[in-house]
Image 1: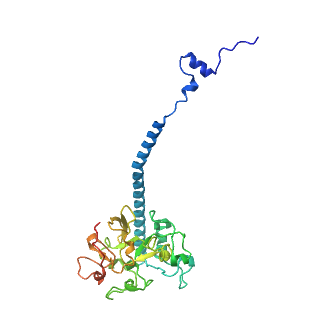
Image 2: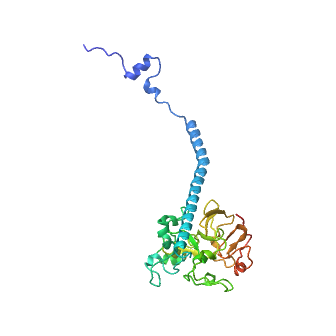
Image 3: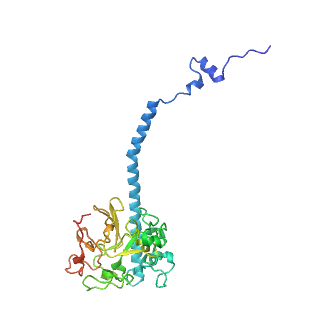
Length: 309
């Protein structure tokens, strides 16, 4: 005869029975009830609702800091350029007809945009990209016809035309003051800037979408960068905008109004000087010197009440 087994069941079941408890396999099958699962899900959802805005805020603060650093590096590059060129600011060098996709400027000369001229000083193309603005251009109309839709944006910033004026955009008040008393056809020297800490050298470009989808494609690359002679602050970073000044420093400003870049085509809005906020575009302007705005005060107007920083 075969020897009789010591007992039935697996070893774990026999041990559990010997100790007076449930079999080991049964003890491992404890599960959550439906109520417990619903409570757990509700707690996780509440935590996500609390923490996600915090994480988003931290991420946007990091982007703001990166953009400020970009402006600082570009501002210092502008000052280094001036040191190498007899204290004259980098020329705009813009091309308002052809894009880099055409391969050459409309007059057949190589591209010479201000950011391209600054590359030997920044040694980094990424400093011209704001992390809070689009990476690719969204084009309609003329720009779509140029094949620029979906193409990379390599420069998100706009240079003060008054600092680098070079006749590359000889239209309206870009080449002379309102009353014609001042011509803007050569870059400014550092001695011509009355208060460098107040003169805006760099701001975010309004050529990017949603404002420049039909025309801005020619101003969003390092080779053909943007420029402006008026202040157009955009609500890009935490309810405000970063500005870089002619002394090389960068600063965040709060903008209470809706994104002001849409004022570009509003002929009743021209912001050359905003004395209350200590920022202006006209290099020779000094609030303590009467007439130093050279006619720009007459055109310095905006719909509604200007807001403070």
